[in-house]
Length: 112
Length: 115
Image (cartoon, rainbow over all chains, first blue to last red; front, side, top):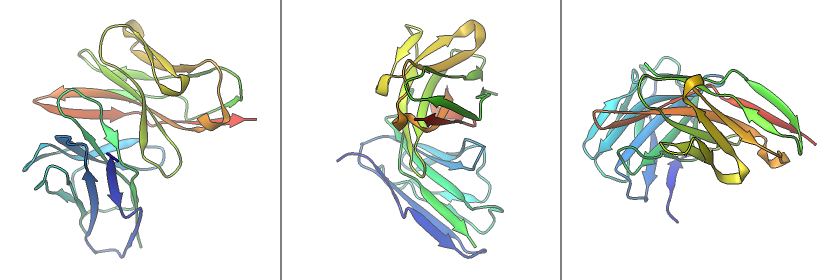
């Protein structure tokens, strides 16, 4: 089955620890995205990547980092510099250019 | 900068009744518009999209939306709601600059369906 997988579904970390969220797609899409969702705020773009080995900051990149070493993978690291990391994180991909974004099932991160 | 407003945070309708969810956007160029639906704890599923052409767009699950440039609106409609339509609905505007494809989302409308 083609699709986008995010793991794990639930993640718990202690304050001050870095944590990496996984996003993998087998759709052969060029572009990948990370969004953060908080109640009542919709989705906000963290980082996006149009091609391998290249990525750009979105609207709320502070405290996050990404890498794009392979076309199918776009991991997101939430660093200890992120002041309020508890949220629902969604990964998306698209064929590229002016095309639809398709979303994964999300990871809920709770920092204790 | 582009923005999307969904003025209704919560809407409750009876099963079988018609539905209209409002979406207004602000964007200087021709907008690319989307409606997504999200069930609790899940990712987003695309309902429909408008890129160009016919301003009335048909989507999945019996949904449609109409693009009205003069009103900067892209309202979502369904003639008869089913209990399974209860979910959160997001409108988004797509911008494409320098090869980058970005979505700006509204804050969502939570739909409750009464049986």
